[in-house]
Length: 269
Image 1 (tube, rainbow, N blue to C red):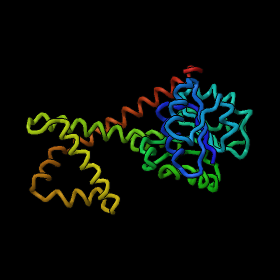
Image 2: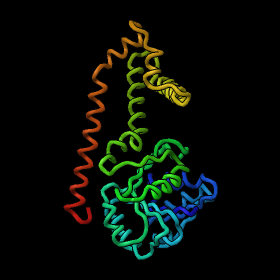
Image 3: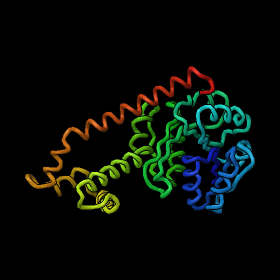
């Protein structure tokens, strides 16, 4: 299958690499800064650089626009005349109303929120379509995205919370582990680097326990013996961790709402 990607920054570059690892996929990319696309193509023979966004659109069965809001609006305006009914067109920009495009083109439009975990063909990849999209179309798109991760269809109003858990999740989890390693280092009995190594191994082992069928609650129950040191440690965390993550979700939601307001009030914001 021919995959097209316009915009090869962090998200677009990650998608390009992920799809390039799928057998029988050819990936076509374009970036207004050619050196970024050329560097990406050097990493994988399945990635080809094309001279324009229009050329990518004309070559792709599934097209991803991985650009900022103002750039996405501008690029799509140039691409709409080149799209056909057999094409899928996705944007990673959550503030774009899909109906604005579907009213002007026979292509099938969707939003896609990938995660860095797709570079190892793992983790959840989120997508949303218009509410009246046929179930058969949703299944077809899920099959396409399923080559690089676990596709999860959500409603548009769920994008923020799901993105916190999947797309932002690896960064949030990694930051927690870095701070934990820093706190361990403050005890003077271990260096932060050694603590980080221990935590990474623990994280990998925990993931394997989950893959083997254990639940998060199972893991807690197997380790936290009543009155034991683990149980005491969990008590020290208490409601603080719950409040921490509530604050995290409130912060990201507020940021998205502010960004959405700016995109509506300022045509090129």
